[in-house]
Structure formats: C-alpha cells, structure tokens
Amino acid sequence: MTEFSRRVEQVSISGIREVFEAAGEDAINLGLGQPDFPTPEHAREGAIEAIRAGEADEYTSNKGTESLREAISHRYAEDRGMEVDPNDVIATAGGSEALHIAMEAHVDPGEEVIFPDPGFVSYDALTHIAGGEPKPVPLREDLTMAPETVEEAITDDTAAFVVNSPANPTGAVQSPEDMREFARIADEHDVLCISDEVYEHIVFEGEHRSPLEFAESDNVVVVGACSKTYSMTGWRLGWVTGSNRRIERMLRVHQYGQACATAAAQHAAEAALTGPQDPVDKMVAAFEERRDVLLDGLADIGLDCPTPKGAFYAMLKVPEGFVDEVIDRGVVVVPGEAFGDHGEGYARISYAVNVETLKEALAVMGEAYDAVA
Ligand code: PLP
Image (cartoon, rainbow, N blue to C red; front, side, top):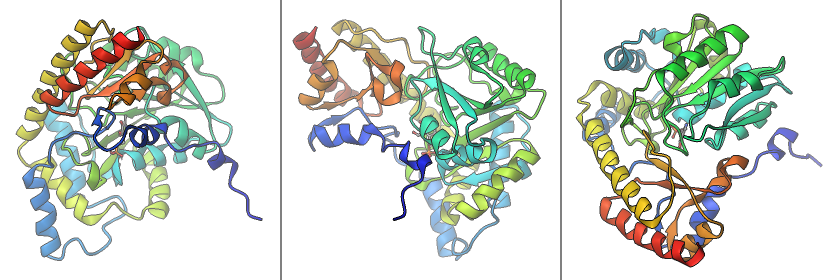
C-alpha cells in the first residue's frame, strides 16, 4: 500500500482551528489572524474591471503580470526607499506560497532552518515539508529575536533562518539595529535570511526596516503580501523578492506548483498597491487604538504583556488553566504552545475586532483570571 511521505507525516494540522471549533458559534473570536476591515473598494474594482474586460481569464506570466510587479517595486521605492527590480519579484498565492517556495528552493533534506519560538506556525511545517530540520530558537523577554541567539544556533548544516517583523504571534517589532545584524549574519555565515515582512505596514512604534536593505551579499529574500496590509486575506496574493538567481530557483518551484497567481487577484493587488493608501493608515490607526484599549484592560486585570509594537496581536503571560477558562466562557484566544514549545504559559490575542467587542472580551478575561489566579 502507498504510505504517506515521511515529510508530511511530520506535520500536523494547525491547532488553532481546534480552538475555534471548541468555542461554539456565539464565541467572541480573538483567535483570527486577519484584519476585520473590508478590502478597499478600488482594489475590488480593479479585479471586477479586469474580469469584465476578459483580462482575468488566462494564465499570466509565471512571475505575475509586469504591471503588478512594477506596482510592488513602486511601493518599495515610495514607502521605504528600497530599490526592487520588478524582474526580481514573483507574485504568489499569498505570503504562504512565497514562504513555501523560498524553503523548497533553498533547503535540502537534513538541513536546518532556524526560526523564532514562539513563531508563525508555517515555519516549522514548511521546514518539514522541504525535508529540513526545524531549529526553533527562544526569544528575548520583549519577544523579539536576538541576532546573537540566531548566530549561536548556526551550524554547518544551517540552510536558512527566518526573521519575522512585525511578528505573529507576538506583535514584536525588531529594531533597525537587529535587522542590520541579521543581514551581517546572513553575509558572514553565508546562510539565507528569509525575512517575512507581511505585516511591514502595521507598525505603531519603532521603524520597520528590512535586512535586504543592509545585506552586502544576496543572502536575503523578502516575503510580502497584500493579505494584511490591504485586508485581502481571501484574495491570496503575496510575493517574494530577492536576487535574480534566487528568484530563478524559486520560480522553478512556483512554475510547477502554482503556474501563476490568480489573474483576478493580481489585478486587485495592483489596484491596491497603486491606488490611495489612506485605507491602510486608517486601519493602522484603528489597530493602535485597540491595542491601547487592550493593554489598559489587561493591566487592570493584572495580566502581563510585553507592549506589541506592530501587527495586531498581543502575547500575554497567563496563569495555568486561564486559556481553557476563557474559552469555556466564550472568548477564543490561542494557547501559546500552538506557536512552539516556548509559547507555553502564554496566550495570543488577535485584536482584529472592534473596541466594543474587545471590551466585552476583556470583561470575560477578567472573570476567567479571577477564577484561576
Ligand atoms: N507570515 C506571517 C507571519 C503570517 O502571520 C501569515 C498569515 O497569518 C503569513 C505569513 C501568510 O499570509 P498569507 O495570508 O499572505 O498567505
């Protein structure tokens, strides 16, 4: 009988879904990793017009349309002063596919991939799927990843390390100095840095910089997406950028696994990237207000939480039994161990809900805390 591949047998379906299912339909869901805003109207229109004009019916070039790749390049130049050649971009089915092809193109069986713990669930799974060995590393007290921790974890077998800032599940933002250090480590140790920047525009404090800006070698690839910035998770549109030879290798995986990103989604993304950016500013301002409401509420309860500086997550230290108690009372939070062994004793809250709902949830968390603390 055909058995399953060893690579796939090492991966399990993310524990986050189970939490939703346990909580019931009326639960307040602070577990979701997506903004609760609509996709900007001009982005939707971009797709609708393309569909009506018959421009979304066919395959595009494997890398994505030239105009989309130019739009991605334009945003890097405009927002961050970064020079990204449109030829060195592959449009992907979300940041997820970009991470996948980055791993597949660079990791050989048995090679190690270093990533933050707690960290986004895909890093461990995609390492296994590429046949590699996950090397999760613990974080600093403020939940950023120390460059020296990464440097110490590098061995002769290391293929890559993943940097994620702003981070899921912690909301932590790495400093520009850290990013410069990650670039130096990629250069000096000759290992690939996969910089997952899908939350790059959702920053309240500090400044988002990319290791790509600082690296002297071509050992950095950057993953981006429309998903979070433009509230377009359902459109499945992201990208990866890096040097020409790395793009060419990743394209081999993308070409045979995906062919191209969905044409209609590419048109929506192009409209989002080239159109007015004020929906992003409004969303970021709303997230910051909610973050402050959340931090005040948690402090009142007595729950400790490093101040999240970006994305829309908070990772808080919780007493034993708290997560189950909160879920039983109808508020979904995700247990920290869903994001790695060092997530134990934490819970992740996504504050992609309105202030009123957040306040309701805080009241429930207060009761749950009193019941277990
Ligand atoms: N990277 C991080 C850190 C994420 O949190 C997510 C989604 O939650 C992704 C990548 C993938 O995003 P996409 O929806 O664009 O595939």
